[in-house]
Length: 133
Image (cartoon, rainbow, N blue to C red; front, top):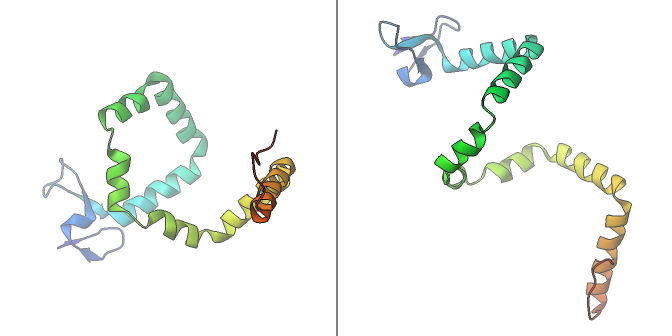
Protein backbone atom coordinates (compact mmCIF):
# COMPACT_ATOMS: atom_id res chain seq x y z
CA UNK A 1 0.00 0.00 0.00
CA UNK A 2 1.15 3.54 -0.74
CA UNK A 3 -0.07 6.96 0.40
CA UNK A 4 -0.83 9.69 -2.14
CA UNK A 5 0.91 12.94 -1.15
CA UNK A 6 -1.92 14.98 -2.71
CA UNK A 7 -5.11 13.43 -1.27
CA UNK A 8 -3.38 11.57 1.63
CA UNK A 9 -5.33 8.37 0.88
CA UNK A 10 -3.63 5.00 1.13
CA UNK A 11 -4.07 3.08 -2.10
CA UNK A 12 -2.78 0.00 -3.89
CA UNK A 13 0.41 0.43 -5.94
CA UNK A 14 -1.61 -0.18 -9.11
CA UNK A 15 -3.37 3.16 -8.41
CA UNK A 16 -0.10 5.06 -9.06
CA UNK A 17 1.66 5.75 -12.36
CA UNK A 18 5.10 4.23 -12.86
CA UNK A 19 8.02 6.62 -12.43
CA UNK A 20 11.51 5.21 -13.05
CA UNK A 21 13.41 7.93 -11.19
CA UNK A 22 11.58 7.25 -7.90
CA UNK A 23 12.97 4.92 -5.26
CA UNK A 24 9.93 2.65 -5.37
CA UNK A 25 9.30 3.18 -9.08
CA UNK A 26 5.93 4.90 -8.55
CA UNK A 27 4.65 8.46 -8.77
CA UNK A 28 3.94 10.30 -5.51
CA UNK A 29 0.41 11.28 -6.63
CA UNK A 30 -2.26 8.67 -7.33
CA UNK A 31 -3.68 8.33 -10.85
CA UNK A 32 -6.90 10.08 -9.85
CA UNK A 33 -5.14 13.15 -8.42
CA UNK A 34 -2.76 13.27 -11.38
CA UNK A 35 -5.71 13.10 -13.77
CA UNK A 36 -7.33 16.05 -12.00
CA UNK A 37 -4.04 17.98 -12.14
CA UNK A 38 -3.74 17.38 -15.89
CA UNK A 39 -7.37 18.34 -16.52
CA UNK A 40 -6.97 21.60 -14.56
CA UNK A 41 -3.77 22.43 -16.47
CA UNK A 42 -5.42 21.79 -19.84
CA UNK A 43 -8.38 23.98 -18.91
CA UNK A 44 -6.13 26.79 -17.68
CA UNK A 45 -3.76 26.60 -20.68
CA UNK A 46 -6.04 25.86 -23.62
CA UNK A 47 -3.99 27.93 -26.09
CA UNK A 48 -0.66 26.34 -25.04
CA UNK A 49 -2.10 22.84 -25.33
CA UNK A 50 -3.63 23.58 -28.75
CA UNK A 51 -0.35 25.07 -30.00
CA UNK A 52 1.63 22.06 -28.74
CA UNK A 53 -0.80 19.63 -30.38
CA UNK A 54 -0.78 21.60 -33.65
CA UNK A 55 3.03 21.55 -33.68
CA UNK A 56 3.11 17.79 -32.97
CA UNK A 57 0.52 17.07 -35.67
CA UNK A 58 2.47 19.18 -38.18
CA UNK A 59 5.70 17.31 -37.36
CA UNK A 60 3.97 13.89 -37.45
CA UNK A 61 1.31 14.10 -40.19
CA UNK A 62 1.09 10.33 -40.77
CA UNK A 63 1.13 9.22 -37.15
CA UNK A 64 -2.51 8.14 -36.95
CA UNK A 65 -2.42 6.34 -40.29
CA UNK A 66 0.75 4.46 -39.34
CA UNK A 67 -0.58 3.60 -35.89
CA UNK A 68 -3.81 2.22 -37.35
CA UNK A 69 -1.91 0.03 -39.81
CA UNK A 70 0.30 -1.26 -36.97
CA UNK A 71 -2.73 -1.91 -34.71
CA UNK A 72 -5.51 -3.05 -37.06
CA UNK A 73 -7.57 -4.90 -34.44
CA UNK A 74 -7.41 -2.27 -31.69
CA UNK A 75 -11.01 -1.10 -32.09
CA UNK A 76 -12.40 -4.65 -32.12
CA UNK A 77 -10.37 -5.57 -29.01
CA UNK A 78 -11.51 -2.40 -27.20
CA UNK A 79 -15.15 -3.04 -28.07
CA UNK A 80 -14.82 -6.64 -26.83
CA UNK A 81 -13.47 -5.35 -23.50
CA UNK A 82 -16.16 -2.64 -23.23
CA UNK A 83 -19.31 -4.20 -24.73
CA UNK A 84 -21.83 -1.89 -23.03
CA UNK A 85 -19.95 1.39 -23.45
CA UNK A 86 -22.15 2.84 -26.21
CA UNK A 87 -25.40 1.79 -24.53
CA UNK A 88 -24.29 3.32 -21.23
CA UNK A 89 -23.12 6.51 -22.97
CA UNK A 90 -26.51 6.87 -24.67
CA UNK A 91 -28.29 6.50 -21.32
CA UNK A 92 -26.05 9.02 -19.57
CA UNK A 93 -26.18 11.52 -22.46
CA UNK A 94 -29.83 11.10 -23.49
CA UNK A 95 -30.47 14.85 -23.35
CA UNK A 96 -27.47 15.59 -25.60
CA UNK A 97 -28.63 13.02 -28.13
CA UNK A 98 -32.20 14.33 -28.10
CA UNK A 99 -30.95 17.88 -28.71
CA UNK A 100 -28.58 16.75 -31.49
CA UNK A 101 -31.34 14.83 -33.25
CA UNK A 102 -33.79 17.73 -32.94
CA UNK A 103 -31.19 20.10 -34.39
CA UNK A 104 -30.53 17.71 -37.31
CA UNK A 105 -34.25 17.38 -38.04
CA UNK A 106 -34.63 21.18 -38.03
CA UNK A 107 -31.61 21.63 -40.34
CA UNK A 108 -32.68 18.88 -42.79
CA UNK A 109 -36.40 19.28 -43.56
CA UNK A 110 -36.06 17.69 -47.04
CA UNK A 111 -34.49 14.54 -45.59
CA UNK A 112 -37.18 14.36 -42.90
CA UNK A 113 -39.86 14.65 -45.58
CA UNK A 114 -38.26 11.84 -47.58
CA UNK A 115 -38.00 9.66 -44.46
CA UNK A 116 -41.68 10.26 -43.63
CA UNK A 117 -42.73 9.54 -47.22
CA UNK A 118 -40.78 6.25 -47.33
CA UNK A 119 -42.24 5.18 -43.99
CA UNK A 120 -45.76 6.05 -45.12
CA UNK A 121 -45.24 4.10 -48.36
CA UNK A 122 -43.97 1.05 -46.46
CA UNK A 123 -46.93 1.17 -44.08
CA UNK A 124 -49.37 1.34 -46.99
CA UNK A 125 -47.60 -1.52 -48.76
CA UNK A 126 -46.52 0.49 -51.78
CA UNK A 127 -44.55 -1.41 -54.38
CA UNK A 128 -41.43 -0.23 -56.16
CA UNK A 129 -38.69 2.19 -55.27
CA UNK A 130 -39.57 4.48 -52.34
CA UNK A 131 -36.34 6.47 -52.33
CA UNK A 132 -36.21 10.18 -53.11
CA UNK A 133 -35.26 11.17 -56.66
